[in-house]
Length: 234
Image (cartoon, rainbow, N blue to C red; front, side, top):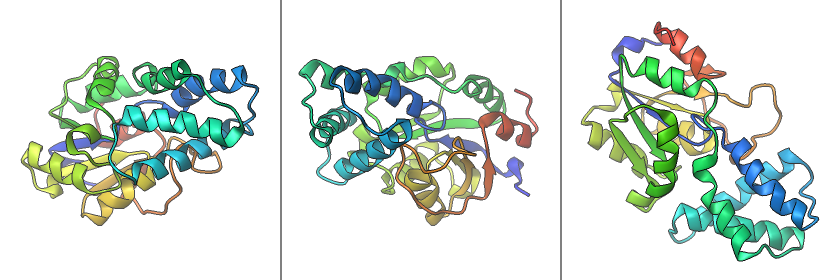
């Protein structure tokens, strides 16, 4: 049993955990594919292609997440036989603030904020997250982005920096995330207690995140369940 009273802060991955990035990705990608008559093999195949392309681009020289998404869009075109227009490339990268939070996100964050300090560790640019933050409706004690660190998870920089900003030992911090690859694997290796929000429960494959194996301290299907496990009412 996890002792939720032992934690002072909860750190969250944003896209995939708080925000339905798979829906957002598909809503931004699908019109481009349709306009060019391109067949990605269905939604799940498109998400898996996104995961492969995104992670491959992020391990190269550092570039902004907006630039990563632009390269992802161009790579979709290169692999599927079309050339997206500059407008299509830019619109795909700029779509991040329109990606919707999960229905349980805002109520859960409000409930958890009554007891814990909340922080975000995200592979994103500051300006893109600023648009998302308005949808989340809570104030975070720290927001650590890839742009600030010039680093992408699963590298450890996000996790080291959030501890520094919160000024807490890792034993007082619980990390909450959907991605085994970007978050649960590296965070557990660094000694964090972790909750895996398995947003894809009941679906095959790993979707928009690269496949990985990691063992969290607790698995929940959504944030509402996490709130219930803490004893806080959403």
